[in-house]
Amino acid sequence: MKPGPHIIPRPEHAVMAGRGFTMDADTALRAAAELRGVAELIADGLRDETALPLPFGSSSTNVIRLSLDATLGEESYRLRVDDLQCRYLAAILRAYFTDTRRSGSS
Image (cartoon, rainbow, N blue to C red; front, top):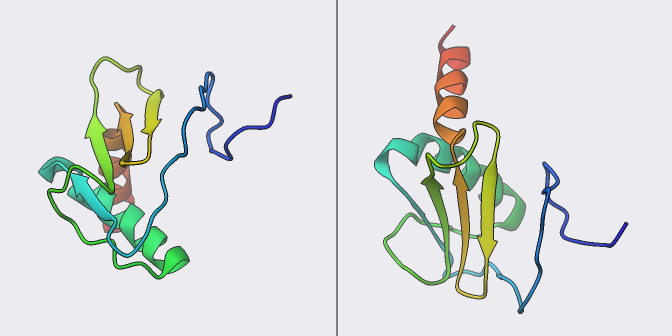
């Protein structure tokens, strides 16, 4: 097996090119209002692990961006990373957040 990025779940297909994305003190998060809850969960975990502030903002560079993509299958995701941004697209984020909120409120 060819070494690749350490991503869970492991991607079915990956193409690595370029330098990649490096988080730093200027990195921000960006998410649609409907994904804010999921984005907060992700941000909390990343802040704990990196000690970076990771504020929410509208920047188009040096950003981690979460988006929904209705063209993807229910358990599919697309991760695009370059030196300007890390973009995660999924159809399942909405379902995950809904289930998380239900679990926490019972």
